[in-house]
Length: 110
Length: 113
Image (tube, each protein chain N blue to C red):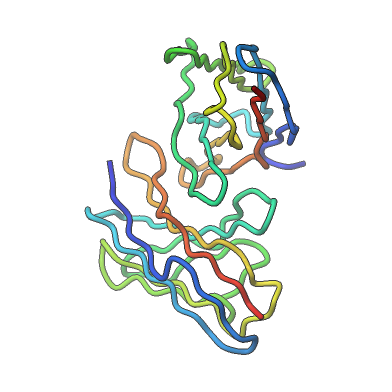
């Protein structure tokens, strides 16, 4: 079983739509969770850390469900500029290594 | 935060040759990570480079193919040896600062012909 599993999409949504991505992880001892954004032909960059209590940053909301071992990312009022690949990242059992999901491709359509 | 400089940013290489990628960080870090991202794929960890000790390689990656140097706390190199077209990929250097997340270099885009 992979450490992190993510629906690769693609998700094609109209501007203004709300879209949600989920990511499951296999190691119940994982402590750190992140969502990264990767634009085409660019390196991944941190979008949000994911906290146990959930966190929100503008149109973006990240949540963690430890019981079911998944994290989610919700994007409201999608913009064209949100088109990218979104990667979930989970740390390893030892905490020294991070595992990346395969990424979910999002295209926001005018 | 951390600023990571990688070079070369891109290169086209002949099969059978080797390429060394450099990674420079603007602060001292204990662990540096080298990732590969093949076309259309996610990131795969190649190895963890620790200063003062041998790099730790992940399953499927060996030192003979991907030798790594870590001469100090701000610098590392990854060599892709005896390249084949299957090595065409983006190679990314990364650091994780204590209590925070990962930062990536801009990547080295390698095409082997």
